[in-house]
Length: 74
Image (tube, rainbow, N blue to C red; front, top):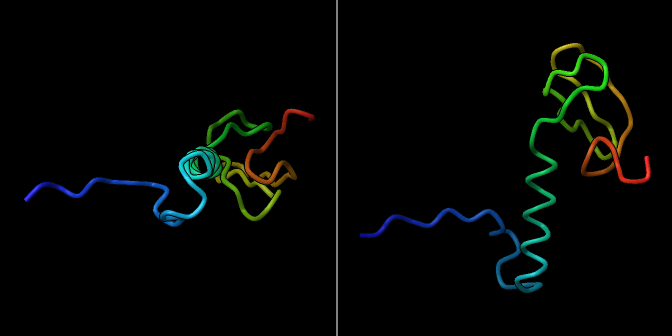
């Protein structure tokens, strides 16, 4: 029996189409990955809630974007 293929955008199933699933996957991967802390420069920042980010090393909490700690605007 072949191994099951790992997919990330399975929540959407057939709704939305391919472009929406690819965009959702890209945003979710960026949101869940660890980012660089502006205070200690260690990649340990994770999202706490929408727009709130926290460094697990130094405990620094700051406001940022919904999916990324810093946005294109600033």
